[in-house]
Image 1 (cartoon, helix red, strand yellow):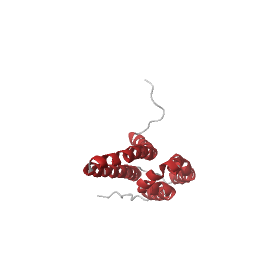
Image 2 (image 1 turned 135 degrees about the horizontal axis):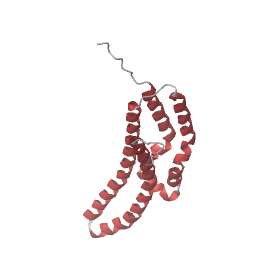
Image 3 (image 1 turned 180 degrees about the horizontal axis):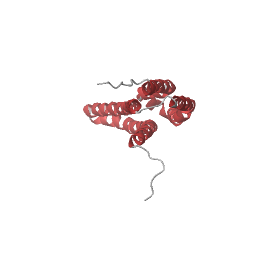
Image 4 (image 1 turned 90 degrees about the horizontal axis):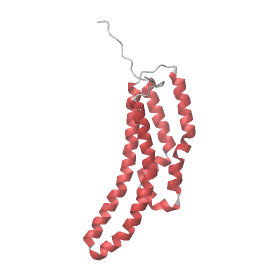
Length: 171
C-alpha cells in the first residue's frame, strides 16, 4: 500500500476550498448580475405595459437578486475569517514558528494585489459599472482588501501566539 508523504488534514482543505469559493463568487457575481440586468432591463417595461403589479413584482425580484450576491460574498468572507480564527485558536504553536508566520504574512501582504487583480480587472471594466453599484459591500471589501487582510493577520497572530496556556493544578 502506498502511503502519502504529506498528510493534509481535512480542516486545512476546507479553508482552501472556502477561499477558492469566495474568489470564484467575487468573479462570478458581476457576470451573473450583468446577465440578469440585461434580461430585467428588457422585461420590466414589457411587464409594466401588461400589468403594473407584474412590473412591480419583477422589480422586487430584481432588487432581491442583486442584494443576494452582495450578502453571499460578504457572508462567505466572514465564514472564512471565523474559520481561520477558530483554527488558529485550536492549534498548538511554538514561539519559533512566529518568525515563519511573520514571513508568510509579509509575503501574503506583498502579493495580495495579485490575488485580487482578476476581480479588480473585472469590476474595473466599464461594462460592469451598474453591477459594481449593485454590490457595495463587496466593492468596499475589494477596495480595502489589504487593510482587511492586515487586520485578519494581526488578529490571527494574536490568537495563535497569545493564547492562555492553562496551568495544571497540583491537586
